Image 1 (cartoon, helix red, strand yellow):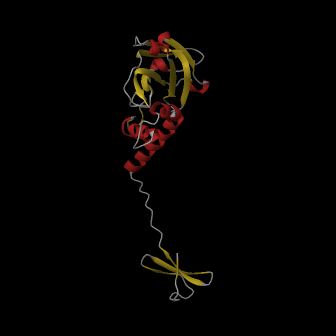
Image 2: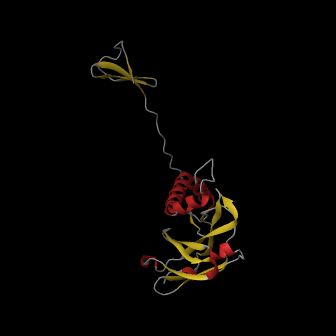
Image 3: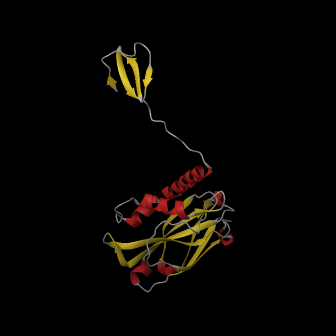
Length: 218
């Protein structure tokens, strides 16, 4: 805002180009005209906004895990921005687009992880998980597994930390009661003792099973 010494506007408010002249506290003042903000509502733009909002809501639920896995390894963007970008671009299918939980990525690291994972719903919201440890490394076999379970209908997440060791080969978790009849998707956090990130063994999160009829909560 600038004070105008020459009272060219009198007592009325006037516009000249991008300038607005008016009276304030008995003085003539000049302000720049507010920039007009456009809010386009084309189908493509609305779709992209919805995808972004859905992804942000999903990622925020498991952000502590994502931050822990990346552990300061990124320099040009935050783990949140990286994973949000990946999923907005790749995790949607259909028209209108909805999340395809088989395509959700919580970490883009490659590393030692489980094989042949199954996720099976049992009565009373019990979810049975079985796997092949897929390693002979003693440290990896003794390491704890953390499970992330997503509700494929609501995109809500549950985190089950340190449920079992990798050597166990099987475990069970209990889904929330309001998840009954919903399919679920399982991501598993494993530790790779042959690679390091910020001087710590690399941790990896991968989608492993679910988003099918066997994974329905009963």
